[in-house]
Length: 370
Image (cartoon, helix red, strand yellow):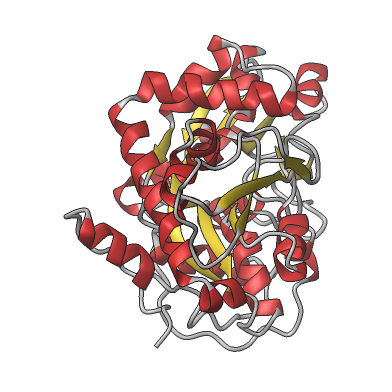
């Protein structure tokens, strides 16, 4: 087993181009590319409106976006927004959500670390800020136990990741390097064959035997286990304190500057949703599944949602040091030129909300606005 990953905290040079991460997915890719939800009831009569009439939030119909799923389903965001109306859009890929944020189609988004880094660096630090955390973990290596019994057995095998340069792809390439094995990052060829396969088709590829395993997020990992796969590694075991960011909350810098009161209200909703999820895990799981059924047409069966839900930690902390480390892993793999991430975080609004709730502040790993 490789040693836990170290955190890279040095300042990094400005990125020239990120064509690989520009097409990377976030944690998982389920649901339509962008879907507006106008089915929710209007705001409460007489509720006080904030500085914006409406706030538009984007997220994925995915368990690692449980804060958004549950907060929207249970009305916890709308309660904090008062007379300001919440509108939501669903996405299945990070680039499309970043594009929507840049175009002004959404104001706030739940999204994975790779698209957050990409969106920030491609805009030379002008498009977004990370303002909070949402989830940690929920990524596993699942294999065919008839072909692979130990981690050393991966050599010579075909292992799927969701997409070239995405968060799980970078993590797997880094793990391979720590094992001392060689793989060409772009082609995926080497001591292990890294096969980039969309999460929606990975279970079929696994059943057919065209791949021997996959390094994937939930619920894909639990779907593979349900198909006879064996969990060989939980990625959280490779990180200090077993924690790493899988979902961030980002905001358009323009919206943050013009409507800080709305941003704080959304963050209050996020903090209170996370508190409710952690205090009521079974009710929260049911709420998340009800939201998924509404958005995708069907809920997840118990044999998939139960283990998937247990592997995801819901947290307000963006785990900034782990995002910095993930960027460094992409650099070392040759997928990313060294980016300057200074200023990617603005955690002042979140820490104000946490302080008001009697909670400790969360750090930005030296990457916050000055």
